[in-house]
Amino acid sequence: MSMEESVQVQPFVEVTFQQSMYQTSIADGTQPCWNEKLEMEFKYHIMDDIVEPGEVAIAVLVAGGALQNIPRRISHLAMAICALHNLGDVLELEEKEHAATSKEEDDEEPDQEGLKNELREDPSPNGDYNSSVLCKMKDKILINLYDNINVPNTEVSGTFRIDTPPMLLGYTWKKIDTGSCEQFYEFGLAESSLLTIFMTLDPQVSCLDSDDKQPPLWQLETIEDDKMLHMARAFQKEIHTLYPKRRIIVSIIDTECRVGIVTRYIRPLCPPQELLETFPENLEATFNLIARFVSLIPYLPDSLGFSDSCSIWLTSQQFLNLILGGKEDHAILLCNYLLYMKENAFVLLGTSILEGLGAYVITQEKLNTMIWNPETGECYDQYNAFCPIQSADCLINNENIWVNIQKNNLPMSLNFDVTKDYNWKPFFSKSSQPHVLSSVQPQELIYYSTERSMVDKLQNRIEWALKSKIMDWRAQHPTRWNRYCTGVFQRFLPVLEQNLGHSVSEEQSTALESLLKDFKVSGFPLQMRYSKLEAIFDKVYSTGVHNIEIPNVEFAVAVYIYPYPNNVLSVWIYVASLVHDTYK
Image (cartoon, rainbow, N blue to C red; front, side, top):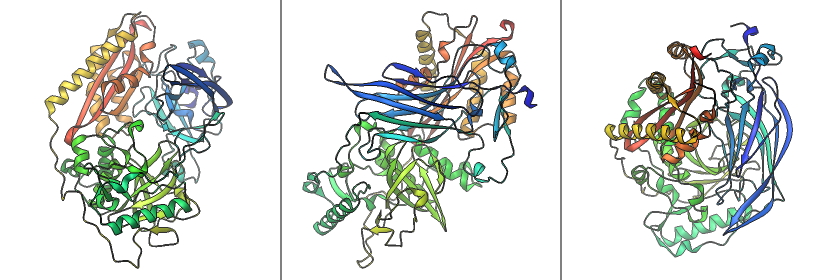
């Protein structure tokens, strides 16, 4: 396609907080710079009273060089949610595009200067039609603004990478020569948007004191001897004195309320055989599939979490039986799987500007260190600037616990060689006898197949419930359902799961567009782990697809669930609004 056929985007950022909505001005082009400040009142409830401690200030600086992947009138991206710890309120930044009229579109000139990539709108019938609807894109980024360790100055700032849906009808990427910048592609920026933001509270809120006294953990029943418990307590006290802001967990509580050393939870465990057989000739794809499986297991809400001083950990079998757990449970399972795959793996404890207190996995091969995020299934090179970890504090395997005593704790600044005592202080010193404690994990995990009939019933239930919800949200307008397009989307969703959520090929996109050539389509697929229906309703509602008021508009909702072992489910939803060619 020629550059003359490109259409210039008109993005803006919308912030929603405590039922109030704010937005920046409308910018032009693929590299906007707003440099604007938004202030919003912050209220929280204590019993029946509302307290107003101050304001939340959001500075939206610039979308760095890649807003070209924000499609016209279907780009409603939830850039960030700041989960207010124990309060339940969320701060949502959404990147949208102004809906221009047809006449305005004809007058637009493409912004070609300085682009590394450009997302172009194809002049095909599948492009978006003129309307005021703004649809949210794929992912949300979680930021724990009130974490007692993560953000001691109650501010969040940085440049964040924004994901796009794996399928955007009517749009294609055009690769522009980036010269010798190999890292542009190495870090996955070839088809990415970046948004730079700064958030703060005024007045600032004091952080919780993490140097609290040791809780009565040591009065509980234990599976360790007194010498081991005393050594663990002394080690933690020493580290907290020298490095008060670095995370360390030496002992935890099991489900029988017994205290034990964390190394007992690390043990090579075989993943489900189904995952190992999916890509028998592609080890990297197998690793990604294993990480995806772990990421699909639901998480405990942050408000139900426990502090590091009294962590409760599950064995991997308990975790798989419950299909629910904390961040550490996810990291342990992924670490155990990677150990089985002969990787040199460790559980990494630290903090993230996106997730607050977190648990990750690192794998080492020669001089390369890779960081795995169990929550998303993503893998980062140690030197990737978009790795969410801001502080790498503690490493754990089945033999030892190491605390980072280097000056820096940012992953890209660290030496992860745990054999260097001047970089990583071990719990079990070299002078002591090797301590490989007996594992609390089983020798092998028990898996069972997810019942297909149950999945089909759930799939039908979700589709029926979503249609009912959309009709409720559009109570003032008629809602017509297009069965043909629903069927087309239904047959296409399994392809997205086979791609593990990655972007579809141009051939696959073209094939889908050919089936929808008689319609103007605005919509995209959503993917999520299954936990409860309300979470699905919220995600679909936030797309805003239901808000369209164009006459003769029709809607399509397709649901597909791929079952993994042990009732782990990957839920795909394609939601779209459509206008038939005859009404153009």
